[in-house]
Length: 142
Image (cartoon, rainbow, N blue to C red; front, side, top):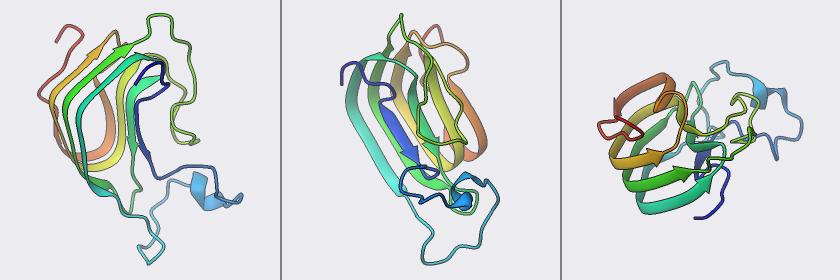
């Protein structure tokens, strides 16, 4: 990938297609039913991105249905040194970012092996409401 804003985005608070429904902006826990999205067993392997702008990756599940079992292996992301701040994930629940590494909310099970992010600012992983995070490999001075 070349000159992408955020190479990896998995976002269950996606605001397009919500038809103005207030629930899409609400971070409360809802009952799980047949309309609740479920995303699990994602594998990202041998992917490179150059001149990324906002973040290397954003992973945002729902309080009632976290993203589950994500593996990233042999990932190489280089942030654009002249990047500008912007919207990473089309969600009011995700702040604007510039040259960030990873942002995760409501994730259960993420493993990173040989994941390199060059030129990011801030923490390697900004996570809340996450469990079973195995982030052994880091870059940018780690």
